[in-house]
Length: 239
Image 1 (tube, rainbow, N blue to C red):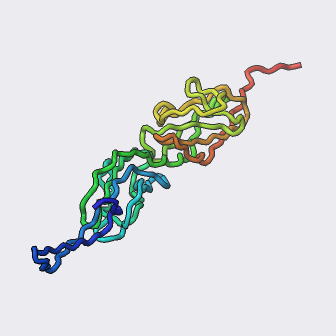
Image 2: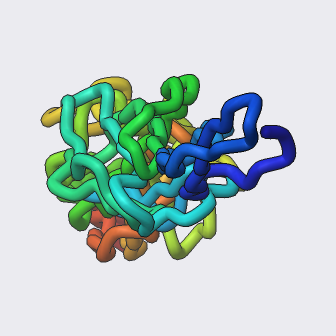
Image 3: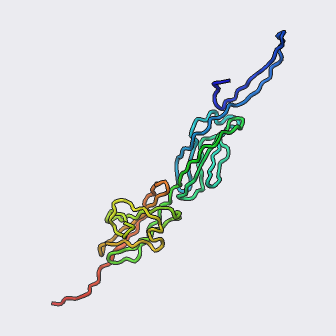
């Protein structure tokens, strides 16, 4: 029979009769039509340790019989199992890691659709901790990024409040109006980057932000400040 609704229970009756029109008793059979196949995955709220997602498409009678959706995190093999709710918040994830997902559906008789193609999403990066300042001199300050447990692929940008400029990773100067995104390693790692071209006896205030593999930025870290030293007098003039 044509033009039936998706994932709907239909009951059919059949009986027979002979040439004299004597009828048998009827027998019946009940079955669900197929469920609609999901067309993809939609992502909701993304956090540092969780990703919310739902299946794209229309799913008729999602709470009927054994109907359900089956979400799968392909990256770490986690799943909520068959669920009759079109949403899943996948928790206990790591920051700035790309996870791949797919989903399938089934009807009230447990007949399954095929999986969707995989969709990927990065968790957010952690907000960096306040940077560490050291080796303060008359025109330079060393700045060390504090990763706050972000993975090595995370990118960072160092900003200075007084000049309203970003640190240029090529020479350490404060001359950029926009971010110079670099990895922790490219910014000197535990040794840090030496910021150059500073004025003596001046306070500089640094903060750092990060971004994940989907280019979603964090807020800035807390600030750290340092004051450059004054040049020593090398000669005296008497009159």
